[in-house]
Length: 182
Image 1: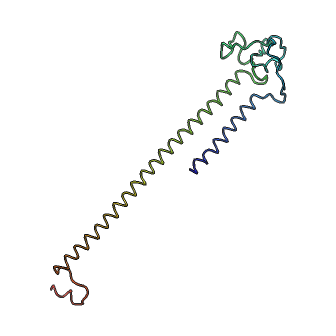
Image 2: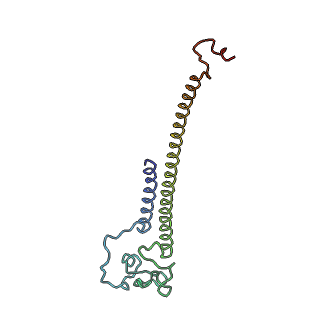
Image 3: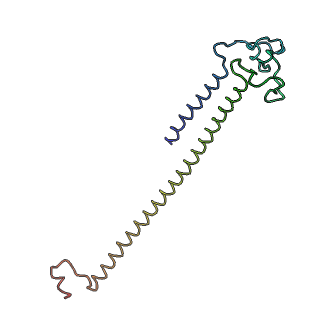
């Protein structure tokens, strides 16, 4: 159980690091706006990237220098609206293409780490189950060996008693017993 709890600490640290990295990627460098513009305003009314991108429904394009509504029917904005390398959404300092790549890498790393942790846990359980089986078989072998030794000692005692009864075994109590059979 103690190895399981020590395995959790690196997982928690890596998850916290990934969360911090994700938060830092979405926060602009130095400027945070406390309020967002009212949602009733049209995206075309915004004239700068800093005023356009805080609205989740708006997309800023540096090629045309205009703010357009994000095409929600598409997961990625089509090239007719704006090229991915020139599109900004969420923050002005990170282009849409880099945002997609970053999110894909972070998501893939999280997915791989979850799969690796699951595999490690399954292998550990399988290995510990195997160890338990080996331990059980070793204990059973030892018990069988002890019973066999006990039976061997009992058999030897019975045989010695029979030998003594019929005089086949010399009595070691008197000193001349070894000369009687000669």
